[in-house]
Amino acid sequence: MSSAAEAAHAGRVRSTSGVAAYRWATGLLAAVVFLACMSWALVSAPFSGPDERAHYDSVTRIMSGGGWPLPYEAQMESWTVTAVTEAGWGYRGQRDESPPLPTARSTIFAGGNWENLAKDQMVQHPPPTTESSRQLRA
Picture 1 (spheres, one colour):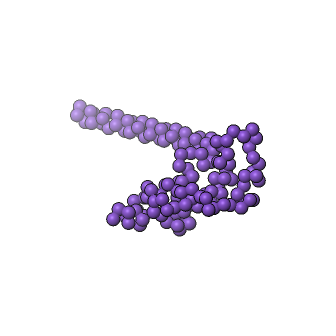
Picture 2 (tube, rainbow, N blue to C red; picture 1 turned 45 degrees about the vertical axis):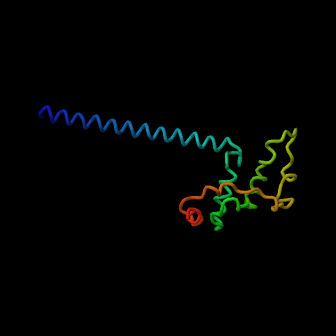
Picture 3 (cartoon, rainbow, N blue to C red; picture 1 turned 120 degrees about the vertical axis):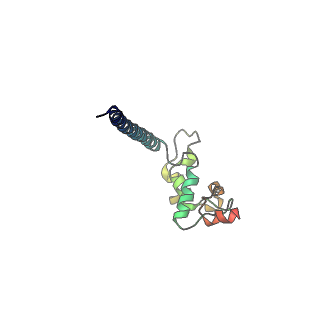
């Protein structure tokens, strides 16, 4: 084998091992990020993450066929208010010595008051493929 052929062969071997190391490192990094995200999801309380209530509300509205409303016109859906209340989110900021019993804070048992719902601010950032966002840009 000539010296040029040996050099070319050696370069291929090095690049193949470099690609394998790169793929292994990328896979390891992806696994670490995945485990960190799963750990965060397991230790954080439901609906306590940033904008989690609004994201949940927007996704469930789209899945139920409600579409993407215009900004400042969307109310939080009743199922979102129920889920957030049942998760106990409204009581986290209070300094009660003992938290209320689930039956005392439940909207399912007591009936919901849906007239005073919060506005869903997530709709001011519509996905670019929806019909309402095309209308807003026109």
